[in-house]
Image (cartoon, rainbow, N blue to C red; front, side, top):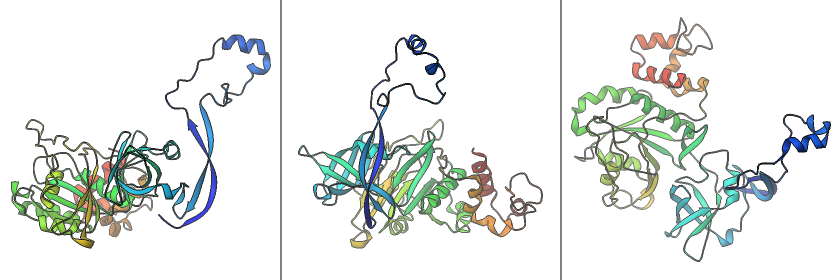
Length: 379
């Protein structure tokens, strides 16, 4: 955790759990009996009592470089990292190697209600161990880089505290979805991580056919690897990319994310599945994000790595990316933006657009330009 500062008192609003709001009886009669004063109530004024729906509590928080965090008795707690989080069940690996099934203290949930996920895989937490071998998460430490998406009008953090997003696609079955790849790249950059594009199942095609795709991403400064979990081709290079890093492996179902990790470190025994014959789409095999330690050959000492295996994602709605920001994540546009006739050119419908001209002349990949337009239009 970052350097602590002074303690402050914070008022936190609590909403009563699992409690239906009581319906007031004979409301019309009560208003008529009360007189005109009650009839002229302002539209936004609440009629119910202050405690009917919510209550407040004052909590003590500590000011850090990353904002306010709950002040807890650290002497009664252990530090750990969330290795999986499903519903109300959070498995936390303590710094001594033990794993605890933890619930979350209610005030922690309340203070984080602006996001969909209070606790996510990869979070660093402070938790209080209980006598029955379980625990209670007392505080979630400020997060580093994250991978997020937009879901249910809020931010859905997929994983926290990673420094590398490994975007896995397949050379065949299922086919590559460039728009999904580009969305992952934008989300990684927005969350503060670098990204690498990995093409699996190279054994199913002529590798030379993948070179144009490799050129698209290497020219934009992204790392690119071609591998095969079946033959072992490129696995040593992938292993070196994961060594000493905090990574998340992401992509659509069926591309072989879990299969790659099983080959990178034999013994993980992650469940794998096959692509559906009728739709050529992958089946969900990994049900939730899971943090794994990479050790053994290639991961000794300082090279020990941590990687999160995630469920397949077929669509990725970007979180907190404004239309005006999208252009900045397509670095190949930059030399041509100054050639646009209009300073606020969106590079979609305007005449005299330098980016569209460069695309027509083959200086910008049509696949990348199409991804840009789809992201901008919210498709």
